Length: 307
Image 1 (tube, helix red, strand yellow):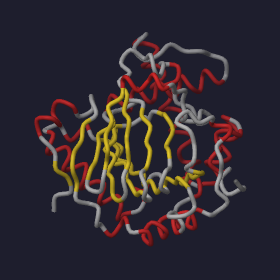
Image 2 (image 1 turned 90 degrees about the vertical axis):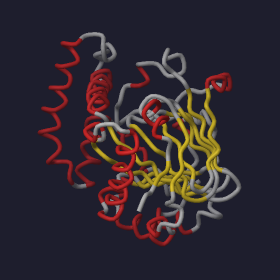
Image 3 (image 1 turned 180 degrees about the horizontal axis):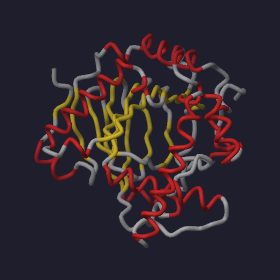
């Protein structure tokens, strides 16, 4: 069964370069029913779920995000009335969602005519949002097809090749750095706007700034994401730059020095080889983030402490 429809010529030209619209047939899929998502939320580690009030600004101050005094499963159960925004991260850890994600990205690779080896590190993120919710202006460190399952969304994706909206410094990756970024209404001159309804989807390329607003009904969406080998390399460099900056060693962006970039990739891989076996439990991940990056690295535990 095919899960998506897209123009092959457009995919070959735009995929991983420019945003574009496509269609899918997942809106009635049983994995996206509210009860299934409630069950999924109950099984996921707490650091794989983030939520807060959906009544936030496009340029929301990360230190002043209003919270929701509910547990994650309650948020999903009451999404029609609770005024919340919630994401379940890394749903590929569940075999059923992993299978669906693999099928979808496999079809995407085939339809685009791109080499399967360009689609690595498949990850899925499911968003459940109340009506009138906003996802503030931000960037994501992966390639993404945002699939609209139910409700309506307006997605604004911004051209940023000259780094005038989001700088190379802001593209550095660090667990203590909140994704929300500075935004001004003048940015909209650079926006491509996609109005998504059930059955619609949009490709958001790597690190292209965007913000999202929901319509008059609650929404369910899934980000089907992957990384190319080049994206993985850039992320390693940007992660090391963000970490080194935290300790006072400001770095040049990727591409400034091939030798420095290769050294950072080696440093990243060596550190992960030591740390990854320790990070398998939620408690260990939370402790390590706090020790290395401080309290802000665990900001998503703030939800549920009242509005």
